[in-house]
Amino acid sequence: MATLNTTEAVQKAVQAQSIVDIHTHLYPAAMGPLFLGGPDELVTYHYLKAETSRQLPSDITVEAFNNMPTDKQADVIWSTLFVGDSSPISEAQVGVVTVMSTLGLNPRSDSLYEFRTLYKDHTPESYTDLVFEKSGVGTVYMTNDPLEDVEGGYWNDGFDLDPRFRAVLRLDSALMNWPAPVEKLKAAGYDVETSLSHQTFSEIRRYLSDWVKKMDARYMAISLPPDFTYPSEESTSTLMKECVYPTADELDIPSAMMVGVTRQVNPVLKDGGDSLGSWDITNLERIARDWPNVTFLTTILSREDQHELCVTARKFPNVLPFGCWWFLNNPSVIQEMTQERLELLGTSFIPQHSDARILDQLLYKWTHSIRTIAPVLAQKYDDLQNAGWPLSESDIARDIGRFFGGGRVLA
Ligand SMILES: [Zn+2]
Image (cartoon, rainbow, N blue to C red; front, side):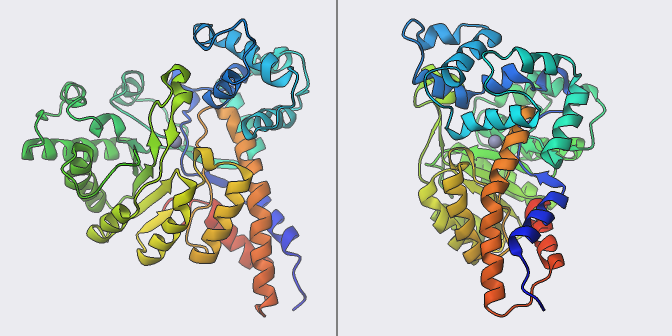
């Protein structure tokens, strides 16, 4: 068999693959105000707000900036980061450039006028079609919270769900900072108590099970701080143990844990003010050991924890690492993490998710990630060929299908 050009074969397979994006914060057009797209939302995303705060013009304080309406904030960000006296080279900034180029716009424009005009010519539905087509994404998993007022309204009243969008039950507002969620759960018809009693556990299990079924949620997800311990007397940990893991087991759906966020280290930056910390992964070992029948979709925010996560996944088949999350979603780190995961886990991980909150972000997050991941895969296939393995294009297409098509559990 002739030696395969792996770079070309990987490229071809990736282009043919309809991407399943297993974690986003996107909403379909039918969910009205929850749908976010277009230049003003894209440019005022908190990554870019945080970056702008480092070089705001001296006559604008961060507080004054925060009080501006969205379109004015977008104008300030545009003139500071993209028209200003430096090149837009951070990952989030290059991302905006990629989005605009992909849409046929001039990213070196003095204003957002052209982009705003293009966006106004679309409906949310037609813009969704455009972005899905140009990004190569076929399916996105959402992050759904029925206890949130606006979103809960849609789920309770019913709406036509675009089949490209799949539901995921987000747990944060129902479980974190107990007893803060008590009132909302009671209002939703679940008779929980402020104490972590048997009644509270059984009512939360009923809430989880009802909503997984109602939304056809494909998994349950929570983001956790780096000091999350298991087992523990702490309320979130107790609720995970008594309610979430048993429900995941019973309904046979994954439990996703995104671990390592420290909230609001700099509150003046609002959504941009969160940071990260390292997690003690012996906690994950104990969770995976106690719940062998539950698949734990796991992503961890600290770069320092990535190698250990791979080793833990080798020891526990029910631990499924996914994505390069948030501060890790940068080419240098994606390259390192993907190499590490391929070497330790073969094909048994999900290399990336977009975490997009603004529809337009799909246009850069996937092109950027694939630009980094494809050469890493091609190199690994070269190693395999050099070792004497006759490789075919269809072998590569099958693997790419697993990597970018939702893996074994979310295809
Ligand atoms: Zn997320």
